[in-house]
Amino acid sequence: MANITLFSQIISKLDRSKFNKIVSKIETDKHIKGFNSWNHLVSMLFCQFAKSQSVRYINNGLRSATGKLNHLGINKAPSKSSISYQNKNRSHELLEIIILN
Image (spheres, rainbow, N blue to C red):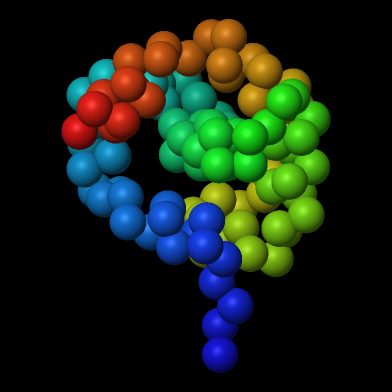
């Protein structure tokens, strides 16, 4: 029996193909090498559901679920610096569209 977390069940409800179409339209993954828009979305949703107070909490929480990250559609937990950089430089427009739709 698979041990899938509640968080991964919530993430599985998101339509990944629709998400990818929006990403292509807005071009938020243009020139991105590692930390893509999906990783950013998962990190920010984890931040909200876990009531995170810091980037360190997001990083540690996702790192503690290392074996289960594939259920979330990400390969490895993002670093604190990657999360901070993307929060600062990536347009909020993508997350706004996802939440409103």
